[in-house]
Amino acid sequence: MVTDLDGGAPALPGAARAERPPRLLLVGLALGTVYLVWGSTYLGIGVMVADMPPLAAAGGRFLVAGLLLGLVLALRGGRRRLRIGLAELRSCALLALLLPVLGQGMVTVAESGGAPSGLTALLVAAVPLWVLLYRRVSGERPVRSAVLGAVVGFAGLAALLAFNGVSGDFPFWTVALVAFSSVSWAFGSWSQPRLRLPRDPFVTTVYEMLIGGAALIAAGLCAGERIAPASYSAASWIAWAYLVIFGSVVAFSAYVWLLHSAPVSLVATYAYVNPVVAVFLGWLVLSEAVTVPIVAGGAVVLLAVAIVLRAERPRRKRESTEDSASDGAVP
Image (cartoon, rainbow, N blue to C red; front, side, top):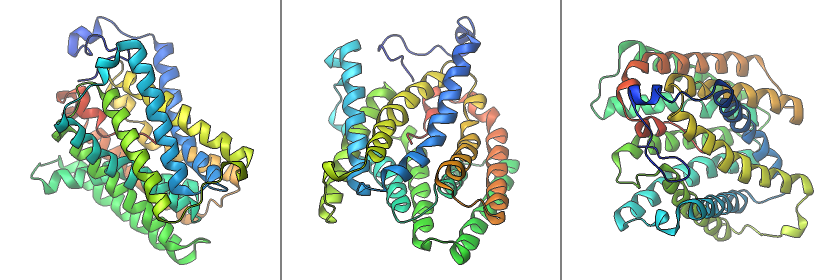
Protein backbone atom coordinates (compact mmCIF):
# COMPACT_ATOMS: atom_id res chain seq x y z
CA MET A 1 0.00 0.00 0.00
CA VAL A 2 1.39 3.39 -0.98
CA THR A 3 1.40 6.27 1.49
CA ASP A 4 2.01 9.91 0.74
CA LEU A 5 5.37 11.58 1.23
CA ASP A 6 4.22 13.09 4.53
CA GLY A 7 3.55 9.64 5.95
CA GLY A 8 -0.17 10.30 6.24
CA ALA A 9 -3.14 8.17 5.30
CA PRO A 10 -2.69 5.40 2.75
CA ALA A 11 -3.74 5.84 -0.85
CA LEU A 12 -7.47 5.52 -1.41
CA PRO A 13 -8.60 2.68 -3.68
CA GLY A 14 -11.46 2.48 -6.13
CA ALA A 15 -14.32 4.91 -5.71
CA ALA A 16 -12.69 6.75 -2.83
CA ARG A 17 -9.81 7.63 -5.11
CA ALA A 18 -12.25 9.02 -7.67
CA GLU A 19 -13.63 11.39 -5.05
CA ARG A 20 -10.31 13.24 -4.98
CA PRO A 21 -9.18 13.33 -8.61
CA PRO A 22 -5.83 15.07 -9.01
CA ARG A 23 -5.60 18.06 -11.26
CA LEU A 24 -4.82 17.14 -14.83
CA LEU A 25 -1.98 19.63 -14.80
CA LEU A 26 -0.29 17.89 -11.85
CA VAL A 27 -0.68 14.48 -13.48
CA GLY A 28 0.77 15.86 -16.69
CA LEU A 29 3.73 17.41 -14.88
CA ALA A 30 4.45 14.26 -12.90
CA LEU A 31 4.14 12.03 -15.96
CA GLY A 32 6.33 14.37 -18.00
CA THR A 33 8.93 14.26 -15.22
CA VAL A 34 9.01 10.45 -15.29
CA TYR A 35 9.14 10.42 -19.10
CA LEU A 36 11.94 12.94 -19.50
CA VAL A 37 14.02 12.42 -16.36
CA TRP A 38 14.08 8.62 -16.40
CA GLY A 39 14.61 8.68 -20.15
CA SER A 40 17.55 11.03 -19.70
CA THR A 41 19.26 9.01 -16.94
CA TYR A 42 20.96 6.80 -19.54
CA LEU A 43 22.54 9.90 -21.07
CA GLY A 44 23.46 11.11 -17.58
CA ILE A 45 25.21 7.82 -16.83
CA GLY A 46 27.15 8.03 -20.10
CA VAL A 47 28.41 11.52 -19.24
CA MET A 48 29.14 10.62 -15.62
CA VAL A 49 31.35 7.61 -16.38
CA ALA A 50 33.47 9.56 -18.86
CA ASP A 51 35.64 10.46 -15.85
CA MET A 52 34.23 8.69 -12.81
CA PRO A 53 34.80 5.01 -11.95
CA PRO A 54 31.46 3.27 -12.60
CA LEU A 55 30.91 1.25 -9.44
CA ALA A 56 31.99 3.99 -7.03
CA ALA A 57 30.04 6.64 -8.96
CA ALA A 58 26.87 4.56 -8.99
CA GLY A 59 27.35 3.70 -5.33
CA GLY A 60 27.83 7.33 -4.35
CA ARG A 61 24.78 8.29 -6.36
CA PHE A 62 22.49 5.87 -4.54
CA LEU A 63 24.05 6.45 -1.13
CA VAL A 64 23.57 10.22 -1.31
CA ALA A 65 20.08 9.86 -2.81
CA GLY A 66 19.11 7.51 0.01
CA LEU A 67 20.41 9.94 2.62
CA LEU A 68 18.53 12.85 1.03
CA LEU A 69 15.25 10.96 0.77
CA GLY A 70 15.65 9.61 4.30
CA LEU A 71 16.27 13.12 5.61
CA VAL A 72 13.12 14.41 3.88
CA LEU A 73 11.04 11.57 5.36
CA ALA A 74 12.47 12.11 8.86
CA LEU A 75 11.81 15.85 8.73
CA ARG A 76 8.24 15.42 7.54
CA GLY A 77 7.23 12.26 9.39
CA GLY A 78 9.65 11.91 12.30
CA ARG A 79 12.52 9.48 12.76
CA ARG A 80 10.10 6.76 13.78
CA ARG A 81 8.92 6.63 10.19
CA LEU A 82 12.27 5.09 9.20
CA ARG A 83 12.19 2.32 11.81
CA ILE A 84 11.91 -1.17 10.34
CA GLY A 85 12.25 -4.73 11.64
CA LEU A 86 15.04 -7.19 10.94
CA ALA A 87 12.96 -9.20 8.46
CA GLU A 88 12.10 -6.04 6.55
CA LEU A 89 15.76 -5.01 6.55
CA ARG A 90 16.77 -8.38 5.06
CA SER A 91 14.18 -7.97 2.31
CA CYS A 92 15.43 -4.47 1.56
CA ALA A 93 18.98 -5.83 1.37
CA LEU A 94 17.90 -8.48 -1.15
CA LEU A 95 16.20 -5.87 -3.30
CA ALA A 96 19.27 -3.65 -3.00
CA LEU A 97 21.34 -6.46 -4.50
CA LEU A 98 18.90 -7.13 -7.33
CA LEU A 99 17.95 -3.54 -8.22
CA PRO A 100 20.62 -0.88 -7.49
CA VAL A 101 23.63 -3.26 -7.52
CA LEU A 102 22.99 -5.87 -10.23
CA GLY A 103 20.46 -3.68 -12.03
CA GLN A 104 21.60 -0.08 -12.21
CA GLY A 105 25.17 -0.81 -11.14
CA MET A 106 25.79 -3.16 -14.06
CA VAL A 107 24.17 -0.68 -16.48
CA THR A 108 26.68 1.90 -15.28
CA VAL A 109 29.58 -0.53 -15.78
CA ALA A 110 28.30 -1.40 -19.27
CA GLU A 111 28.05 2.24 -20.33
CA SER A 112 31.54 2.82 -18.93
CA GLY A 113 32.70 0.00 -21.19
CA GLY A 114 31.18 1.62 -24.28
CA ALA A 115 27.54 0.51 -24.47
CA PRO A 116 25.52 3.30 -26.15
CA SER A 117 22.95 4.89 -23.85
CA GLY A 118 20.12 4.53 -26.38
CA LEU A 119 20.72 0.83 -26.99
CA THR A 120 21.04 0.32 -23.23
CA ALA A 121 17.62 1.86 -22.68
CA LEU A 122 16.07 -0.39 -25.33
CA LEU A 123 17.51 -3.51 -23.70
CA VAL A 124 16.30 -2.40 -20.27
CA ALA A 125 12.83 -1.81 -21.75
CA ALA A 126 12.45 -5.60 -21.90
CA VAL A 127 12.00 -5.76 -18.09
CA PRO A 128 8.19 -6.28 -18.29
CA LEU A 129 8.82 -9.24 -20.63
CA TRP A 130 11.17 -10.89 -18.13
CA VAL A 131 8.67 -10.26 -15.32
CA LEU A 132 6.02 -12.05 -17.37
CA LEU A 133 8.41 -14.99 -17.85
CA TYR A 134 9.04 -15.24 -14.09
CA ARG A 135 5.32 -15.21 -13.45
CA ARG A 136 4.79 -18.00 -15.99
CA VAL A 137 7.57 -20.13 -14.49
CA SER A 138 6.13 -19.62 -10.99
CA GLY A 139 2.84 -21.16 -12.10
CA GLU A 140 0.76 -18.12 -13.06
CA ARG A 141 -1.14 -18.20 -16.33
CA PRO A 142 -0.87 -14.85 -18.13
CA VAL A 143 -3.40 -14.14 -20.87
CA ARG A 144 -2.52 -15.52 -24.28
CA SER A 145 -1.98 -12.15 -25.94
CA ALA A 146 0.55 -11.22 -23.23
CA VAL A 147 2.47 -14.44 -23.85
CA LEU A 148 2.45 -13.76 -27.59
CA GLY A 149 3.71 -10.24 -26.95
CA ALA A 150 6.52 -11.61 -24.78
CA VAL A 151 7.60 -14.06 -27.50
CA VAL A 152 7.70 -11.25 -30.06
CA GLY A 153 9.59 -9.06 -27.60
CA PHE A 154 12.25 -11.66 -26.90
CA ALA A 155 12.72 -12.07 -30.65
CA GLY A 156 13.35 -8.34 -30.92
CA LEU A 157 15.70 -8.50 -27.94
CA ALA A 158 17.66 -11.33 -29.56
CA ALA A 159 17.92 -9.31 -32.77
CA LEU A 160 19.26 -6.30 -30.86
CA LEU A 161 21.92 -8.44 -29.17
CA ALA A 162 22.85 -10.36 -32.33
CA PHE A 163 23.17 -7.44 -34.72
CA ASN A 164 24.95 -5.17 -32.27
CA GLY A 165 27.22 -7.98 -31.13
CA VAL A 166 28.40 -8.57 -34.69
CA SER A 167 28.64 -5.04 -36.04
CA GLY A 168 28.66 -2.81 -32.96
CA ASP A 169 31.49 -0.35 -32.38
CA PHE A 170 31.71 -1.46 -28.75
CA PRO A 171 32.51 -4.71 -26.89
CA PHE A 172 29.71 -7.27 -26.95
CA TRP A 173 30.14 -7.95 -23.23
CA THR A 174 28.71 -4.50 -22.51
CA VAL A 175 25.34 -5.18 -24.14
CA ALA A 176 25.30 -8.69 -22.65
CA LEU A 177 25.83 -7.11 -19.23
CA VAL A 178 22.92 -4.75 -19.84
CA ALA A 179 20.74 -7.74 -20.74
CA PHE A 180 21.81 -9.42 -17.50
CA SER A 181 21.00 -6.27 -15.54
CA SER A 182 17.47 -6.22 -16.97
CA VAL A 183 17.02 -9.88 -15.97
CA SER A 184 18.13 -9.01 -12.42
CA TRP A 185 15.92 -5.92 -12.26
CA ALA A 186 12.94 -7.93 -13.48
CA PHE A 187 13.54 -10.62 -10.85
CA GLY A 188 13.68 -7.96 -8.16
CA SER A 189 10.47 -6.40 -9.49
CA TRP A 190 8.75 -9.79 -9.52
CA SER A 191 10.02 -10.65 -6.02
CA GLN A 192 9.17 -7.35 -4.34
CA PRO A 193 5.44 -7.93 -3.64
CA ARG A 194 6.34 -11.40 -2.29
CA LEU A 195 8.73 -10.04 0.34
CA ARG A 196 8.04 -8.63 3.78
CA LEU A 197 8.76 -4.94 3.33
CA PRO A 198 7.92 -1.65 5.08
CA ARG A 199 4.39 -0.46 4.35
CA ASP A 200 5.73 2.83 3.07
CA PRO A 201 7.44 2.37 -0.34
CA PHE A 202 9.50 5.51 0.22
CA VAL A 203 11.04 3.90 3.31
CA THR A 204 11.76 0.74 1.30
CA THR A 205 13.50 2.85 -1.32
CA VAL A 206 15.63 4.64 1.30
CA TYR A 207 17.05 1.36 2.60
CA GLU A 208 17.45 -0.10 -0.89
CA MET A 209 19.49 2.89 -1.98
CA LEU A 210 21.56 3.08 1.21
CA ILE A 211 22.45 -0.63 1.20
CA GLY A 212 22.91 -0.79 -2.56
CA GLY A 213 25.04 2.36 -2.60
CA ALA A 214 27.33 1.08 0.16
CA ALA A 215 27.67 -2.31 -1.60
CA LEU A 216 28.58 -0.68 -4.93
CA ILE A 217 31.23 1.52 -3.33
CA ALA A 218 32.70 -1.51 -1.54
CA ALA A 219 32.70 -3.46 -4.83
CA GLY A 220 34.43 -0.58 -6.58
CA LEU A 221 37.16 -0.41 -3.95
CA CYS A 222 37.66 -4.18 -4.11
CA ALA A 223 37.89 -3.95 -7.92
CA GLY A 224 40.68 -1.39 -7.60
CA GLU A 225 38.74 1.68 -8.62
CA ARG A 226 40.53 4.87 -7.65
CA ILE A 227 38.33 7.58 -6.18
CA ALA A 228 39.81 10.99 -6.98
CA PRO A 229 37.07 13.64 -6.84
CA ALA A 230 39.38 16.52 -7.81
CA SER A 231 40.23 14.86 -11.12
CA TYR A 232 36.67 14.58 -12.40
CA SER A 233 35.37 17.07 -14.94
CA ALA A 234 32.58 19.53 -14.22
CA ALA A 235 30.38 17.71 -16.75
CA SER A 236 30.73 14.42 -14.87
CA TRP A 237 29.92 16.09 -11.55
CA ILE A 238 26.85 17.80 -13.04
CA ALA A 239 25.66 14.49 -14.50
CA TRP A 240 26.22 12.74 -11.14
CA ALA A 241 24.29 15.43 -9.25
CA TYR A 242 21.48 15.26 -11.82
CA LEU A 243 21.20 11.49 -11.34
CA VAL A 244 21.14 11.88 -7.55
CA ILE A 245 18.56 14.65 -7.30
CA PHE A 246 16.36 14.22 -10.35
CA GLY A 247 16.90 10.59 -11.38
CA SER A 248 16.72 8.98 -7.93
CA VAL A 249 14.69 11.39 -5.75
CA VAL A 250 12.44 13.68 -7.81
CA ALA A 251 11.39 11.27 -10.57
CA PHE A 252 10.82 8.37 -8.20
CA SER A 253 8.66 10.52 -5.92
CA ALA A 254 6.65 11.62 -8.97
CA TYR A 255 6.30 7.97 -10.03
CA VAL A 256 4.98 6.81 -6.65
CA TRP A 257 2.57 9.75 -6.51
CA LEU A 258 1.27 8.85 -9.96
CA LEU A 259 0.68 5.25 -8.93
CA HIS A 260 -2.06 6.28 -6.51
CA SER A 261 -3.24 9.39 -8.38
CA ALA A 262 -3.66 8.21 -11.98
CA PRO A 263 -4.62 5.01 -13.82
CA VAL A 264 -1.85 2.43 -13.72
CA SER A 265 -2.27 1.87 -17.46
CA LEU A 266 -1.32 5.52 -18.01
CA VAL A 267 1.65 5.41 -15.62
CA ALA A 268 2.96 2.22 -17.24
CA THR A 269 3.50 4.04 -20.53
CA TYR A 270 6.87 5.20 -19.17
CA ALA A 271 8.19 1.73 -20.06
CA TYR A 272 8.06 2.48 -23.79
CA VAL A 273 8.50 6.25 -23.72
CA ASN A 274 11.77 6.28 -21.75
CA PRO A 275 13.75 4.34 -24.41
CA VAL A 276 12.59 6.72 -27.16
CA VAL A 277 13.77 9.68 -25.09
CA ALA A 278 17.07 7.92 -24.36
CA VAL A 279 17.76 7.07 -28.03
CA PHE A 280 16.99 10.63 -29.10
CA LEU A 281 19.19 12.22 -26.42
CA GLY A 282 22.04 9.77 -27.11
CA TRP A 283 21.94 10.73 -30.77
CA LEU A 284 21.58 14.45 -30.08
CA VAL A 285 24.14 14.91 -27.28
CA LEU A 286 26.59 12.02 -27.60
CA SER A 287 26.31 11.53 -31.39
CA GLU A 288 25.44 7.87 -30.92
CA ALA A 289 24.62 6.05 -34.15
CA VAL A 290 20.96 5.16 -34.69
CA THR A 291 21.26 2.21 -37.06
CA VAL A 292 18.58 0.24 -38.87
CA PRO A 293 19.03 -2.82 -36.56
CA ILE A 294 18.64 -0.61 -33.47
CA VAL A 295 15.51 1.06 -34.85
CA ALA A 296 13.94 -2.21 -36.07
CA GLY A 297 14.83 -4.33 -33.05
CA GLY A 298 13.93 -1.55 -30.64
CA ALA A 299 10.57 -1.01 -32.33
CA VAL A 300 9.76 -4.72 -31.97
CA VAL A 301 10.70 -4.71 -28.27
CA LEU A 302 8.67 -1.58 -27.51
CA LEU A 303 5.67 -2.89 -29.47
CA ALA A 304 5.84 -6.13 -27.51
CA VAL A 305 6.03 -4.26 -24.19
CA ALA A 306 2.97 -2.21 -25.21
CA ILE A 307 1.08 -5.44 -26.06
CA VAL A 308 2.00 -7.05 -22.73
CA LEU A 309 1.07 -4.00 -20.65
CA ARG A 310 -2.23 -3.62 -22.48
CA ALA A 311 -3.07 -7.30 -22.13
CA GLU A 312 -2.25 -7.22 -18.41
CA ARG A 313 -4.30 -4.09 -17.69
CA PRO A 314 -7.45 -5.89 -16.45
CA ARG A 315 -5.30 -7.97 -14.08
CA ARG A 316 -3.50 -4.88 -12.81
CA LYS A 317 -6.79 -3.22 -11.94
CA ARG A 318 -7.44 -6.01 -9.44
CA GLU A 319 -3.99 -5.75 -7.84
CA SER A 320 -2.95 -3.35 -5.11
CA THR A 321 -1.09 -0.15 -5.91
CA GLU A 322 1.99 -1.49 -4.16
CA ASP A 323 2.07 -4.59 -6.34
CA SER A 324 1.82 -2.39 -9.40
CA ALA A 325 4.73 -0.29 -8.15
CA SER A 326 6.94 -3.38 -8.12
CA ASP A 327 7.13 -3.38 -11.91
CA GLY A 328 8.77 0.03 -11.86
CA ALA A 329 12.30 1.13 -11.45
CA VAL A 330 14.55 3.65 -9.88
CA PRO A 331 16.81 4.55 -12.81
